[in-house]
Length: 439
Ligand SMILES: Nc1nc2c(c(=O)[nH]1)N(C=O)[C@@H](CNc1ccc(C(=O)N[C@@H](CCC(=O)O)C(=O)O)cc1)CN2
Ligand SMILES: Nc1nc2c(ncn2[C@@H]2O[C@H](COP(=O)(O)OP(=O)(O)OP(=O)(O)O)[C@@H](O)[C@H]2O)c(=O)[nH]1
Ligand SMILES: [K+]
Image (tube, rainbow, N blue to C red; front, side, top):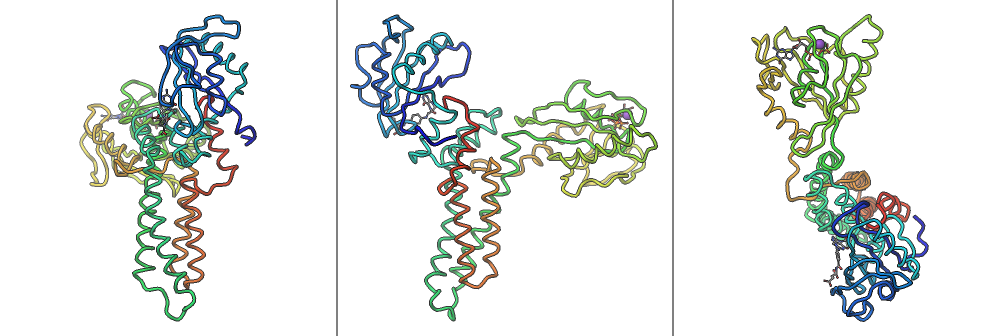
């Protein structure tokens, strides 16, 4: 996004396209209220109304034609979403009405808002930090209640407060180091250096631990079903879905390509991936399927490794990628067990036995025990800044005071970036590029 025109008055339809009970045209900037005067006719005049009030009346075109009945909400700088003067024209929510009201507002001198420009202005006015602006974006697009809860927490500033706690430990250490730099022979005592640094590291590590959960909650998760032929992968997929998505036969090697199906696991959107059974095979097509299965396991957030409980246990013929996180499952628990293993969940796709426990285990493995009520990291940008901050803290641990001081300053810079107090313009612009017009 270019940074020109930031003192222009901007306008956009703020509500979703299509018909709705009510629709809103939002106008923000120095001329917002005088422009509202030109389109709104009521008993009061927007530019002479106190902030925080609304007027009821009519919206009219340039030639005086009545466009709709409506309300005008008046916000005065700095007490508005953007921090600027804002007029909200609230109409009946028809695209025909909204486009005529917007045209009139543009005719009166506003320019169309760029995507995210209202929120960018709120950020530049210091009303939101970058992590809060990201939370606004996540709230607007939240598809699950978990995503909504985390976004609302982020918008409330809870993430900023967590980061601030880490930063305060680092600042304390840095101050102690700087106070003693002129007397290097003394060294900074542990209670001013090792202790707060350990606290900062522990808090930051806990925060980083929420990243997977945060990303799973907002973007959903991929779950790959892996196992030998006939282990019961397709049957388990169908049982989890509740309908026959994947072909099940007694013949080993039934699934050769992979297939995907969507499932909601306690509000988390999950993509289940059924793969070809893993075995040594002379069949070219099946062998390609096996290689693909291993690759899919590497790309999944979680691998369900299935082993047939009714036959003698055999190791998987292929190595799973080392980064894969694996949950082990013993299938066909309705049949006499040929083996058991306390670290393996037993399920039956036929009777449904063990399925509720499996669903719970999946949910726990995907969302972890990230504490409720605590803010999570939800974007790659936040995770990257937190990782860099942690690396600097760890580097500082074993360095002499002067060099440690440098690492701590870098850690503070990364923490400031995390909440968006010290961020390069292109990074900010990349965040706002994902917004819709009108937000
Ligand atoms: N109609 C409408 N609903 C909306 C929004 C909006 O802009 N318009 N929002 C937008 O995304 C969200 C609410 N966000 C907002 C946050 C702060 C202010 C605001 O003007 N705050 C002033 C106090 C105004 C007053 O009380 O007079 C302030 O904090 O100083 C407005 C909306 C959700 N609902
Ligand atoms: N009794 C019992 N039989 C099962 C269960 N799950 C699967 N089966 C049977 O095991 C056989 C193989 O099941 P599939 O679901 O096709 O196994 P798969 O792992 O997808 O097999 P491939 O496609 O060959 O890799 C079928 O005859 C199923 O009916 C179960 O929980 N209990
Ligand atoms: K099969």
